[in-house]
Image (cartoon, rainbow, N blue to C red; front, side):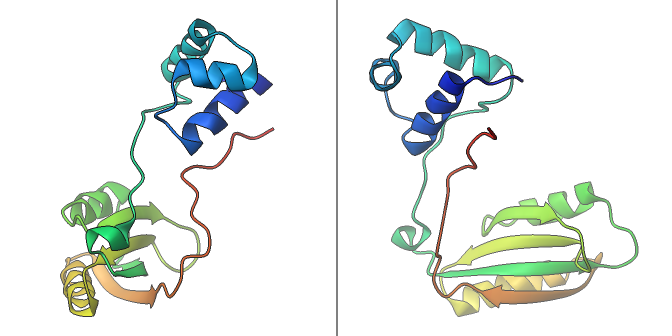
Length: 151
């Protein structure tokens, strides 16, 4: 999908605050509310915008431990198999297949270290998992809701 500078500005403003009204977005970039709505509808229809959501602070909700887990699979395991297995765990907030030695990387949040360990044990017990390697987050340095559109 081809984006012009107004589309990019609309996306940036909505990523910053998805509750902004079309009128407010339009006032910031020099368009009417109806023109912004048409553009947002086009961006949604084209798949550039897939939805509107809320960003949460995990620690405010009681998730005080966060870690990244490298997943090493036995033999060749299809990404769909990994996804189905980790989808059962609400503590897994991100999961991606990756290049390199690991087959996938998971981002896990937990209420405490014991909870993190329990989730890690359950994931490690999946029949396709050969081993895991985890690192704990000490301080998140940068969190973006989304990457800005390329120029």
